[in-house]
Amino acid sequence: MKKIIKKKINIINISPKYTAIWKCGYNIYKELKKNNNVKVKFIDLWDKDIISKNNFFRAIQLIRGINIKTSVDEINFYTSLLCVNFMKKNKSKKNIILIHDLYPIKNIENIFVSALTRLLYKKIKNADIILTNSETTKKEYTRIYGPRKQIFTIYLGINDLFIKNK
Image (cartoon, rainbow, N blue to C red):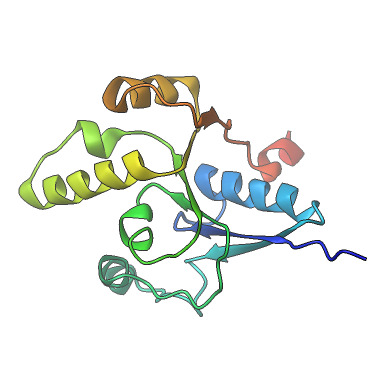
């Protein structure tokens, strides 16, 4: 009997809990968990065991780079701001980035942001797959980066609490 090798996927999140991007990543995680051939892990950087609760120290940790102790064989999935730190350190075969908007790339106000934006621009350009939250963001991406085959739109969901209260 041939053993089925599971793909290992990490979904790494930086957004505060229950925001649109957090919800999108978590819903992707829930859907992937249903597949028996996938071993998926949702890493929430708001978890106190992974990163400091204090926002000042959180920013320092993000700039330095966070060492997540987990084996990644196949895919890492990031929100666009995380890709600056993690893509240089991970050894996964594919990198997927969720882009909510391209505001940081379109609007550069100061030199520090400019340097970070150039790095972010390169990391997004080198990602294997791009996920956008709307057709507008997808068109913006195409206008800035040029056409690409591996770009898909995943519409962000509505919080369950909002639906239950109606």
